[in-house]
Length: 387
Image 1 (cartoon, rainbow, N blue to C red):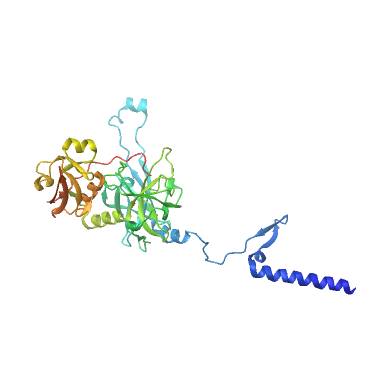
Image 2: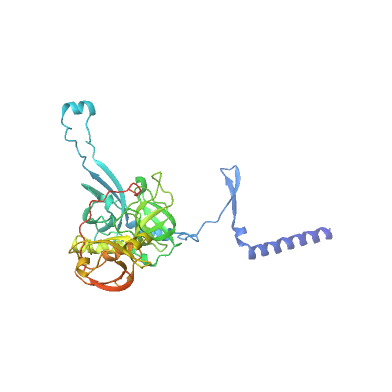
């Protein structure tokens, strides 16, 4: 009898010791709850998370902060009727042509409590009616304040009270590898958030816009995302989603966004003057190549070679000649045609600016007074755009 009690006491002691060890080192083991599933199967359930808690690594706070300011944009454009649409024989053979309005879908971002919205120019281009739907289901008629086809940006305005506003970030501080979220209304399914990283910066020469300085991301961007927000992990706006590279029409992990630094400048110009003002010097630039350098007898190893100069244009008046290589604008170096184009566009018309050039083997500096950049021709939307 004594041996039995002794064994029982030792067993209890060992179990209690094991309990205290587990409670100290692995308390989560003791928090697991088991219970019947429909009275048939015993399952293990995780403990309930505290109300309002956020999982480690979650980006929900950023999405929650920015999502209310991202809107859905629906556009309609009257159908273009054929000149022969009223001909009875034409209607007999071909039916009614072009009677249905053209419908468009995109996204936008509220950037001001006054109701200003940034979106893509190709989202609203040619639209007769623009309907803006907020994330809280409110609707408003959108008015185009101004557009900038050269960067594919547009500014709309809506008249509603208590509008949510996104916080503008600093796209110049972005680095490759930074986490980002894309928010928009792909395919019209409703507001959707996708995540990824910054894949590259300063993408240009893609043939999408006149002025290109894209943020490349692998966050999924699809048709309907155009004009939506690319945000950082703090929920701040870093870019306006505008295009994708795709062979199927859907996301392939290569998307492009216009940096908020560019969008902010366009917004300010349009709200202030109704249009964007850019500099222009009247030259035909080309990327420097060994063949062009040999043709013009240039000894430069970097820069942009000028193969043509407009007579009586700003560059010609300043003394720029064909064969000159522009290596810098306003003390900033330029290495290719796109960089020169962007640098000149950023100059204030009528204000002289110092240009660094190389002519043959000689280096020189000229003061060029840029003029106002002529209006660009109507832009044709590439098939790679995230409509």
